Structure formats: structure tokens, C-alpha cells
Image (cartoon, rainbow, N blue to C red; front, top):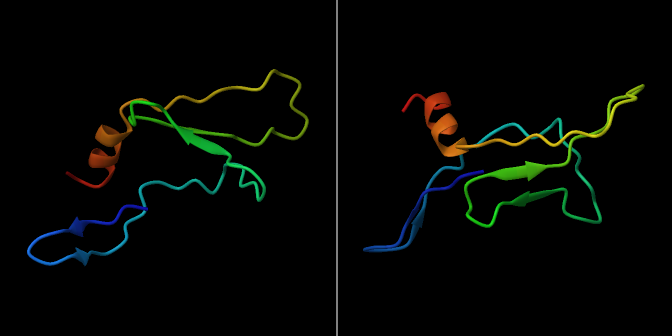
Length: 75
């Protein structure tokens, strides 16, 4: 979720906006199942293994997600 924040002349918080749908990724109650790269430009999510899958787990890398988000939001 993204929230615009104004700090001057008074502090104000705007409307929440969903950045993306992460409902197909693992939500673990006891540990974090996502991370942000050190440069803050990408998210890494744990994706559930598909039933009957015999292949190795895969890593999905989303690069330039700010640009993709801007396109999806019509900017």
C-alpha cells in the first residue's frame, strides 16, 4: 500500500492506494515471506509451489517496478 504524506505546513496523510496484488504469494504468519532489494528498487516474494510440480523452485524478479506501476496507474 502507498500513502501520500504531507509534512508542511501541517502533517497530513492521504488516501491509501494498493501498489500491486500480492494475493498469489505466500503469507507466512511466523516469518517474512518478502523482501526489498538493498537499493529499494525491487521486491522479492516467495511464491507457493504448484501442486504436482516436479521442477526446481523458481525465482521471479520484477525489475523497474516503479515504471511498471506508473504505466498501470495511467501516469
